[in-house]
Image 1 (cartoon, one colour):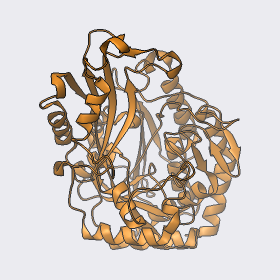
Image 2: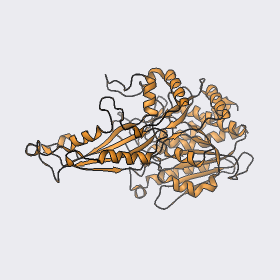
Image 3: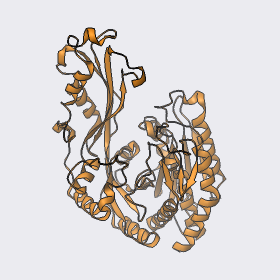
Image 4: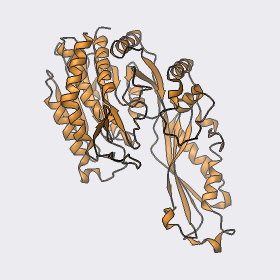
Length: 474
């Protein structure tokens, strides 16, 4: 492939079409169904689906078909089939599966002045706004990569593009579509997912593992109604204190280390070696991108351990609280209950359903002060550990990264979860995986000031083109 010619085509496509499309897409508050249970009534999801589908449908790709597939009461998916360069489109043929999603996380507070979740702004070659990087660009970049190969008359395999609308809710709708579309998808030999991260914006990053997640809401009730704190304190046990006691069953309060051995898994030797390289390449940039308050120290004693903590070890976060009024409305009242939303990240190879059961067992057994304790588990999500990389793919990733970025490809784990990957790994055990994305330092998916690094995304699209071509010629 002529890299320069491909990059010129891709840059122009991004500038003329993709960026304007993403600007309009960011304006749509199409929150994932977990955060907008009335998504059908509100219509934002449908608006995003129609926008992306319209652009994809208009692209000049010979033989391409596009369908918005729907199952009643489930979020839709956009399903595209692109014949092989020789015109064949038999699902039994060699197939590439390209994946992305179009649903978004909720607004989150803390956006800088002039920025907002539904306000697209370009600053310093970065497109700010919710969903542009996570993962609205995926459909556009996928087709653009294919077109870049076709523009040079280079052969590629039959390709299927699947864009879902439930990923930020755990992809609970997706298995139904995978089953329904199974015969049309075929047997992918390569899966390309554009919904992951990058250690920097200077080279190609490939995700080799994803953590799983178990989560739920822990509630402690001690009273039927709130009472004057002067009257009740010292007699009625505090629901907050009881929650604190329960949490000490899960984690060491000084180090944050999870205590139950059931939440751990062995770390493969290859992943340890890859993590050492990442720690060496990134150095201080393992920690620098985090927006620490001045003086706050990072956990663990070195960057290698921090990366293992983030990618292969369990970690507990508290993502929401209930039963506490805003400080401005906090009277002298002993509250009847306290609730905490727990988010437990799990090693890539852990069983998430079993982890949820273990969470419930640990928290509910023998409650302090005989308080009423309940744990409402959310849907669990398994992690994913990549199969060994075939030599052709390793060579292609290295070649494309050096040609496009001028630096070698890197392999890393990610601390987040893409439920689709575990599902695909199980259904297509012989497939190779290129899991990558634009969520690099400070891009802040799910948080305030999310941005898409435009120059990096353009180059990443070119790397995907090279891999598609090398897949055909392997």
